[in-house]
Amino acid sequence: MKVRVDPERCQGHTLCAMRAPDTFELSEIDGHSSVVQEEVPADQESDVREAVLSCPERAISVIS
Amino acid sequence: MTTEDAAVDDDGGRKHPQVHFDRHTPDYRDRFEDITHELHGQCPIAWTETHGGHWVASGNREVFELARSAEFLSNDHDVKGERRGYKGISIPPPPRASEAQGGFLEMDPPDQRYYRQTLNPYLSPAAIQRWIPFVDEVVRASIDEKIESGHIDFVDDLANIVPAVLTLAMMGIPIERWTIYNEPAHASVYTPPNSPDRERVLDLSRKMGMDLMGQLMEIRKVPRPGLVDALVRADLNGRTPDDGELLGVLALLIGGGFDTTTALTAHALEWLSQNPEDRDRLSRDRKTLLDSATEEFLRFYTPAPGDGRTFSADCEIAGTEFKEGERLWLSWAMANRDPSVFPDPDTIDMERKGNRHSSFGLGIHRCIGSNVARTVFKRMVTAVLDRMPDYRCDAEGAVHYETIGVIQGMRHLPATFTPGKRLGAGLDETLAELQKVCDEQRLAEPVTVRKSTARIGT
Image 1: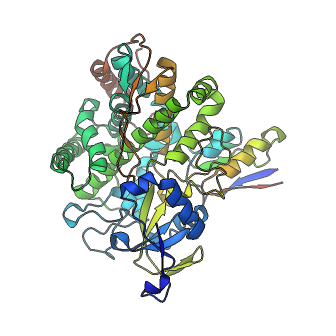
Image 2: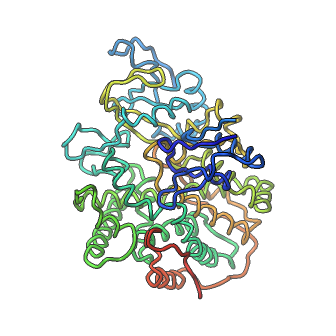
Image 3: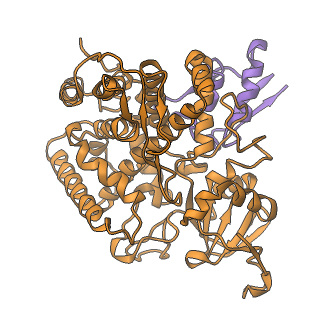
């Protein structure tokens, strides 16, 4: 599974990093999210799926 | 609410369906769930003639699509009539005499973006993380004032104090002055225009404004780290804002920082008192439960229930045609109860999954203080769970805001609990000590300048 954050849509709500802190990192400056690595390790897949569903801006997408 | 005949519309039936919707009435608070589900079922976007006529978006999909259409929506409050005369985010707008631009929340890009870029390094998750020992110390002292008595008012004695003190500290304003700011910040929200108390509240607001102006001038002369300093030295793409504009920004930071977090905390503590098993579970399982429970309280109580906008161009969004100049109410609170996104929406589920609530707004105006709000809320609630685990709120003494048109808040929430031991100094002494820490460690610097966490009592 691959995961991406659309930087145009992300507004820094920070919920993704709350749900899946090993996959998403937040900018120190404005809290906007980016992925640590596109390829999601199997043991993080369910957290990442939950992050997708929690994003208020629908900015995260996964490709499996 | 009644759905009215579209034929009365003088715009070829475009303003359809029409409803009677007035969120400033006590009835809207009392029947919030019924009204919300009626709107969802019949007209997730509707036109209402109240308050000068405006659209109301309540459906989750509709609110989402509208809020994210920044190219067609304006937040501008054109107080001086220099642009298109738009009225900002309040519906109805404030009376002409007391009209002022509400900071960057009543601006459009690019100015709105320049302001946020200026302030973000003070408000990011990493920036707020540094303040946690400071927050904990204010919480500790506030609780210590009451812990031996077995009585507390969670609003007056805790949830008003902590957000106020932290907001001022972050701004770079001496924290002992929190009492000058506290009363007007809350009372100006819950006091209706026709109240006999209105004059007193206006007077307190004027005093707060004068103090803010004094701070602004002082910090301009002698730099002192914090949000005020960032603003007086801001270069907004070559433009230096005047004092009136800056005061609007400072008032926005206070309005956003004080009443909303108080509102969330009071409602959550009230619900936890009514649901003691959930309270015990939250305390026990806080490691896994506190984040999702916080988001659920945010969703369910939506302290800032919505925002106004003005259409800046003719457009069609979510299946409805809008004309330039028309006003729109985006109801975050009603979007948060849409059953198509939130199963069983009127029930609090502390473990709720997929909780993509809009309580901090959506799109480019996302609440810039969201990280402050979450952190302060969590520190206050967990301290209460630790130090007064058997607290009982007194239903008779609880006072909710009469209307929820602006903020869904509480004025009082008295409670009793088994008395405990003080852990340290009282509030005044603690604030004096914390001011020294603020000054010596320059806590209010942006995260780009100071990375380290506050050190207390070392």
